[in-house]
Every structure is written in C-alpha cells, then in structure tokens.
Length: 100
Image 1: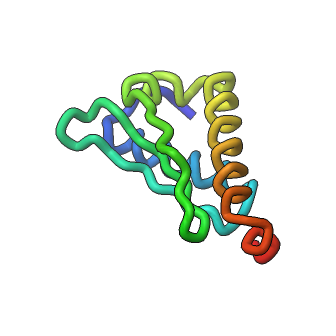
Image 2: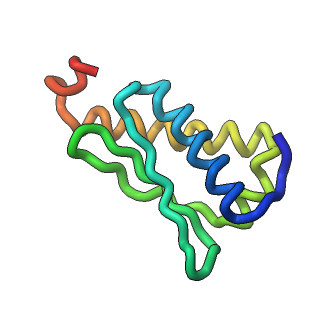
C-alpha cells in the first residue's frame, strides 16, 4: 500500500478496506462510503446488516489519504470497523444473527 492519491481513488480504497474488515464479522454486512462531493473533506462509513445501519464513522479525507500506507493506522481503523460491524450485527437480534 502507499499513501496519497486523489479523492476518488482514496474513497475506492476505503470502500474495499472497510468491506474486507466488516465481512470478517459477518458476510451479510454491507458497507456504504458516503463521499462529501462538494468539499471533498470527509468520508462517512456506514455498515448495514438487514434493516439496521451503524452510526456513521466520519473520517477526514486528508488523514485517510496520508495514512493508508501506515500499518499501525490501518490496524486501528480495521479495529474500529470490526467493532462497528459487531455492533450492527448484535443490534439486529439473535434470530437474524443466527441466519448469517
């Protein structure tokens, strides 16, 4: 991995990264990365499981672009995403979780 890249390239990387880590908690978790097209200053990551959605994880676009090549930074972000995925799966109820 490397740091930098334009806004769209970093958004694509973030979408793939978040999806990869969220699906480790449940293959049914979907990832949505909302882009701030007007300002291009932030990304908002939401995880969806069934009819439940996680709170948005708001990330500074410059921070993501600069640090996506850092294993330490990526490890912290992966932990945050996996925690969100567990929360959204657990909030969906035990009956739906058993089906995943």
